[in-house]
Image (spheres, helix red, strand yellow):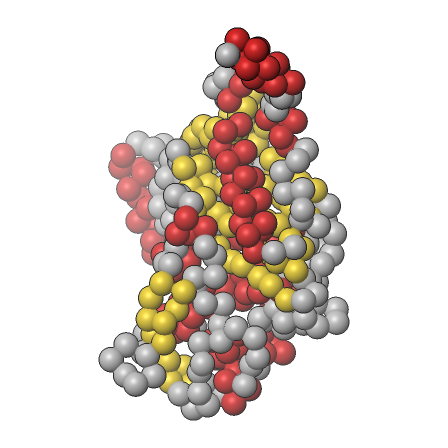
Length: 385
């Protein structure tokens, strides 16, 4: 018994200790490319061949969904709007929700069909509804790529089937996902594991999420899988825990189980090594500016997004400071317009910067409004004569 115990202890000693840094070199080791980012800051936690251009398969649909959500936000589409399916859409190959030519389906159900079941027919139907044709919609997709400052992507279709000249990278896919998850409604759909469409009809269809992590890994609530013979097995997954959202992307995995396991390991690595600290909420007014011709007395300046910083858990929590810089302002100013930046510092080193905007639209007063505004200020003593 003593010899067995000594042998067991010797084996334990021989097993190398794997630190977080050692582990970083081995995560997603079967992927052809991979990247791991924190969503609110865009900080990269791990990457491997992240800019290599490869077929993205159905992860393409993340850009399609981003444009769909922006169309809904602008009022060009409504969730309950019925879309008539074209023969082009119903004839799409690959993954489908079995749409029929001239069938009508709501925007909401079509979006469910894209996010849950990766329906190629559903995404083409919405692309045509938004842009008139898939070709026009693909141009919108590529325009959005450029607007986001991404350089590794060229789309040829809106669904992701292999096509010459259709490519992206793990980096670009992760940063498209970073934009997409700002639309919370998408996460409501992408975390559903199974549901039905056309309930109460003979054409009822069962949808099962292609992203199995939403069922088997707590905290994962999206986002998009992909597979073609040219792309291999791909996945962009997102998980929220302790107030922090992580996005992991892998491309070119050999099979779905390896893909899921390695993405799960990437997410575990992120949450075990870093933490997020909120510096300022996007609702916080960081400055007030007076413009004599503005309708309001003071224009309130707020961050365009929550101002967060990451820190390594092993280093302990940091206490950052920040500095606000406002541009020269000219009316009118719309909510969302960039009016300056907030710089977050740790020991005088800038560790994050976030654009500033106005809390509400700042418009120019007409002559009558300007007269009464000045009169009010004279009476109150704000302007002396």
